[in-house]
Amino acid sequence: MSNSVSIPNISDEEKGQETNDDYVRRTRSKFRRIHNKLGHRHRTRNNWIFHGVVRKLRKWWTIPLVLLSAGLFVYEASTIWKKFKEPPGSERNTVPTTRIVHGVRERCLKLSPPEYIKTLPSSFEKSASPVKEIVYITGINSSFSGEKTTLLQQPFEVSRFNRFTGFQTFYERNESFKVDEIASVHCGFYSENGGFKVSDEDKSYMETCQIVVSTCTFGGGYDLYQPIGMSKETIRKVCYAAFWDEFTLKTKELEGSHIDNDHMIGKWRIIVVRELPFVDQRMNSKIPKMLGHRLFPRARYSIWVDSKSQLHRDPVAVLEALLWRTKSVLAISEHGARSSVYDEALTIVQKNKEKTEEVDMQITQYRMDGFPEVKRFLPIAALAEASIIVRDHTQLTNMFMCAWFNEVVRFTAHDQLSFPYVMWRMGMLKDINMYPVCTRRDLVNTTGHKRQEKPNTDGDV
Picture 1: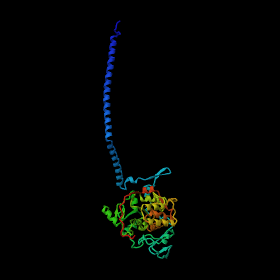
Picture 2 (picture 1 turned 180 degrees about the vertical axis):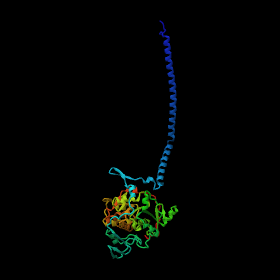
Picture 3 (picture 1 turned 120 degrees about the vertical axis):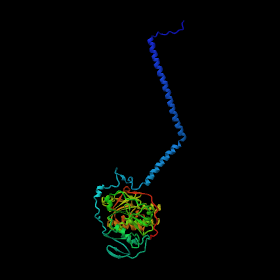
């Protein structure tokens, strides 16, 4: 037997063809091996980098976390600092606030277009008032309903009354709430020795004002914020009056705020008051706040702005929106936190904002007078926030402000307690526009920072 293997006969052409196919296969195989080798190296390199990063992160993971936290802290701190340093008159703070009403978002303060405001007159007809004349009580002898009646001098009941306020008896208090054609009421400026004195030049200026925006700072207190947002026509129509005492004047001058030759700082006329009648500066501030009709005897309208706030709306537009359009004689904000006078009194005591015995005396008297424990006097709220007061100087509102001032003097300086009571006693629920909190926020920019006020050491009580 033969162990050989038979080989089939292959032609030369077939041999050449086979050689070419083998060459192609070998070439492709070679390139594939090279490609795979390079790819392996590339993948190996990427894996090395990835695993290196992972190892670094495992070892130093706290550093990126700390850096991220520090970055967020710096960002938030810078935001808060910018907000703190941002002047109240910046454009960001003048963006209108809005609220949802019946599912529709609308502006809280609906101001008329500037073109319409420009057409409004500089003088206005007086609103109708059930009170035709007010007799300001200046001594023991008082006039009621046009007849001069001598009242017996009664024991002095509350030591807070002084030569400025006049010594209102409890009988006179009850009479002061009666809305008659001729009304008699104590209303400050009791005697020449009572204090709150201003120069003759300032008095002459105040007698020229028909529309007034006023504020005050006594004992240092807040900075003076310039009003913004008014038109040139409004600037000509409106007086801006800021009441300072002599201590505030010196403090502001040391800070670089100097009054020019026209008694002005910016748009504010600075009126320096001497011989303030109260030790408590909060009580002194109630005089320009509540008795503006006595300081500006020819004024037709006024807007009071607490010194912590800056008005950034056109005053004439505000009068049109809050008084004329709503046919009201006084506009004031609802309270943002509480709705009941009795709840407010409890909060005041808990936070030590007033003396407990004074608050108890006031609330006890209000309960005896039948003042209801309600959260609303339809259609308005039963508690107000009194930092912004817009009013028509009718005889009725002048009488109201006098009675309100006397309640503050008799009981506590926390005027939010007495405002609803006086409104209720005088039956003025339909005459007052108590607008929502967001409207107040749209009227002013408010700062929460305040210097410590220096007490008035020359005051009586």
